[in-house]
Amino acid sequence: MKMKNVVFGCLTSCALAFTVVPGTASAADGESVFKKCKACHTLEAGKHRVGPSLAGVVGRQAGTADGYNRYKGLKGADWTWTEAELMAYLEDPSKYTKDKTGQRSTMALKLKDEEDRKAVIEYLKAH
Image 1 (cartoon, helix red, strand yellow):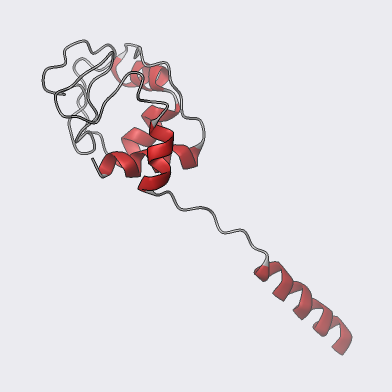
Image 2 (spheres, rainbow, N blue to C red):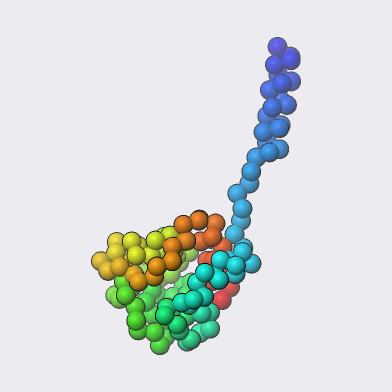
């Protein structure tokens, strides 16, 4: 009986020692992910490309970047870009806007990896 307890204790200790802790997203990681976004977006306020500037996007009402009026799928949006909204949107923008506004977004980039989405949101929060 003692030997079973010793073996169980060793196995438990080993399991705890090798438990993988999920990564935490950082703005530095997000800067790397944001390179995928640069073809269409900038972080310079008021400077737009195919897509709107993402400067100050976290906390801003969707579809309201100053000076940008080519929104498709976000016209009449009644939500604010919170971390949760961005997480859902960045996973599949077209499906997300179709479900919320009835129109599909023209944004083609999908960030399927949850850690990439978290990281880019941290990066956006810093800008």
